[in-house]
Length: 312
Image (cartoon, rainbow, N blue to C red; front, side, top):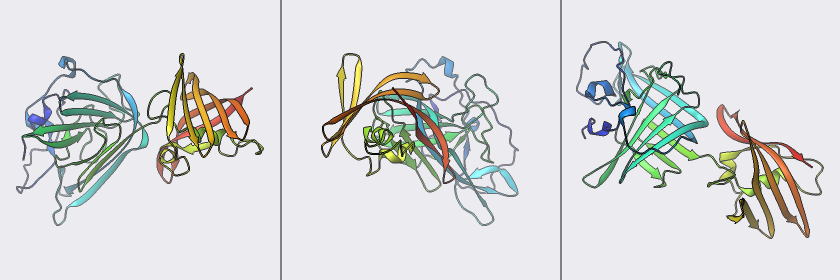
């Protein structure tokens, strides 16, 4: 097992957490309290370079075993009489990601949408600390979080290491990736944008415009992340710069739809200029008001894009 202290060379300031002094009864893998590693590091003293916070879609599912007679200890192996606990967080919501790179290694901090950035207490939401390390040319990964053994967001910094045997599947630029083992799975996807990649697919905007022959708008809300990867909205996205204006387009089967961002109104609301060349020789021009939001679909929070109206 690799040295976990080496995994924390650029850790956050880690506050102590209370637990009883009972030692593990058997020699087996358990969830390691970071405080027991004897290492702490004040983030303010870290002079490394960090990327700014950006919103992402993240879904994190953690499972661990506890002895009902000694619930302060968490374990990553099953034993007779142990209870499996599970917590699913960031339920497809908009979280915040901060990234630091160091050669082939990286560190990611992921904060839940309600995390308290203003003070040390209460945390308000979950916080994940995710590392990629390279030892003798081989990559390996670990994840820790700020939950207690009940799975509650109880601390303002990451406290418990959930393992270091994760498999990575995704893009090297970390725009989209999954880390998983038998008990834990972290999925991260970018939230599409009107001004930077990945772009909201223009064919989604076409559905908000509708067809000339239709009376009114039929589709007024889209499950954005699922729509982006669907067959309905398949087609290569093109961009072109005209002065200070970026146009995002899709030309498929002779139907071309383009949009540009006219205004960011705040609160997830945007005004789009849209050119619709999908109805023969007719070219429609529209000014759409849309808004990003969250809705619960099939018991999960989803990122949605809503049509709010059209200007004259």
